[in-house]
Length: 263
Image 1 (cartoon, one colour):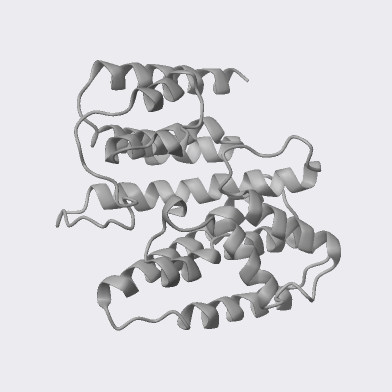
Image 2 (cartoon, one colour):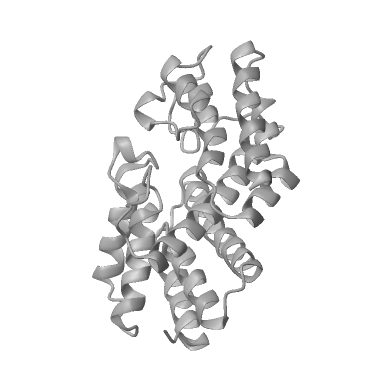
């Protein structure tokens, strides 16, 4: 597997030009495009930093960065068409991203193995579970992307929850109502260390619990270390209502961390 610095630079230039084609005079619309552009750049940094800690060589690091660069490429067309980032209200942004990648033929310089790893990592990054029958190297990059992606989404949502202006952004909140309580199905998913099923998410509290529950899909120790250092889960807990059920959820999470540390 050989990926040159020039390959990476060309894709970065393409990405920049592609994003510039989604420009709005309305500041609110442009803000949501910028949100995803900035997210992509930070996921690239997270991906490379994690990859270095895991001992990847230069070619593998460049592949990791390309995967991160393209993982949300479908978001721009999604927002342009539907004015939402909710896949439930529009279409699967990963599949839309693959269509964009193929339409623009941006992977033509690469061999079939590299193309496969990029396409599949993008395709799998937002799935509830990874396929068990996929090749190990593909699962590695998919897991690395899922970790890097979650790290930055936690940053985005915690920054948002603690904004001083308190102005709501339906794009970040997936247009969910800010109503009291949370769904029993979401609570049960959390108690059983399951990724929350998006179908069970009915309000903003459910969505916050779903974000906390991503911890059960973290794959690498350096990612866990960053989560603890940055206190993402505690920050989200502090914007949830005080509740014995929430306390119970965090007892489960503490047990999860303790088990990971023993292993």
